[in-house]
Structures are given as structure tokens and as C-alpha cells.
Length: 266
Image 1 (cartoon, rainbow, N blue to C red):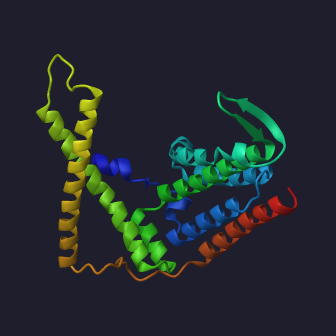
Image 2: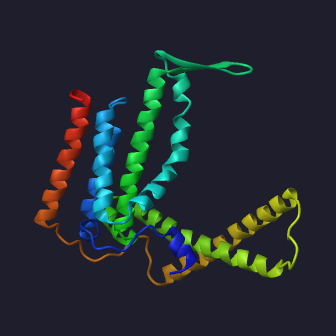
Image 3: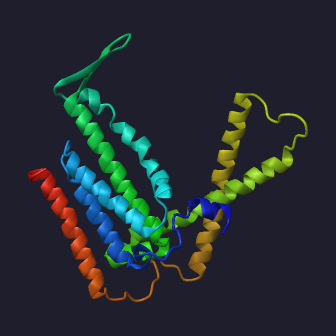
């Protein structure tokens, strides 16, 4: 496996139930879990705690490593911070006030509850997606999307985006190696000012775009020459086993029960 593949590939080999389960079952479970999590109203902390417990139990059963799952789930943090202004913009009971030089920000209890709820929903949903991608090979996941009647064009776009990430990474690594070979400095620091480095990085980014575009054209022509018509080729779909259907039904019932209980009881 190349460095690029090791960096981008999210799948981890294993022998757990999640690794052996049908990709269609796992995909439907993940979608049902995410839908149930996002349907929990803000401030229903017991419901969020139950959903978080379920996803971390799944992470433990999958045996892909709790620390690895946690680190990968942190990718959601920058997007969650977009909801931070709701602490100050959502009307409600006054919680605190920040007096700045030109204006004051007033935080409300409802705004804080909404922000924490968005954080928990997003982080829990991303964790479920991390477990799914860590236990399912990409091609099987794409095949599951196609088996569930997702439009073929959309599946083809996702497949090509995934594959061209490796092309982009390989081209970037090739350029970095060429740069290192042409700018070796012994006993002193190489490079110039920050402006010079910015110009150099901008030139490399433009060159990388041109090189990857050219390579993508050559790859596409090779695919067309080999009979590619825009659809994902796969063997005939294997019927779902009865025990897999039962596991899916039980999981969806549990997710729905937690979501309903969070709205009516908790």
C-alpha cells in the first residue's frame, strides 16, 4: 500500500461481526441511526446519551480501536463550530454577557442548549459514519448504494471522487519529491521569506491542478477504451439472509424507540 493509500483509505481489516455483515445492512443501520439521532429535540440529554452509548458499543464490537474511532470523529469539530453563533443569536433566558470593545454579546440558555445539541448530533452521526467506513471496503459500500437504488450517476460520481483523491495525493507527493531533490541545502536552512514561500506554494498548487487535470483526462480515456459507460460494474446482488434482516429490524426498532422516548418520556 502506498503512502497516499494508507493516508486516504479508511477501511481496516478485521474479523468482527461488522466486518462480516452485508454492506447493505450496515448502510441502512447507519442511516437509520443518523436519522434517529438528528430527530432528537435539543436539550434531550438522556436521548443523546443513549445514542452515544449505542455508537460507542458498536465501535467496541467492531474492534477497530476506540482511540482510532475517536480521533477520526474529530473531523466534525470544525463544522460544528459554525453553529457557535446560535449561543448569542437564539432568544431565551439570559445566561451570560460578554462586553467587547464595540458591542456586547448575550448568551442564552436556549442558545447554549441548541449549540450543545448540534455538537452531540453531529459528533455522534460522524462517529457512526466512521465505524461504517472502517468496517466496509469502499467498493462494497458503493455497491450497497447501487443496490439500494441510489441513482447510478450519483454512485459513479462518488466512486470517481474517491479514486481521484489517490491520483491527487500521488501527484502532490511526486511534486514534493521533485522539489526536495532540486532544493537540497546542506548545513543551512533552505527557502526564503513568507512571501516567497507563499508564491512557491501557489505555483505548486497551480501546477498540481494542471497535472492532475491532464492525468484525469488520460485515465478517463483509458477507462472509455476499456468499455466504461458510467455505471458501477458488480456481480448480481446476493439475497439478504434472514438473520441479517432480523438484526436490521431490531436495530432500527431500538433507534426509533430511543428517538420517540426522547420526545415523549425523557
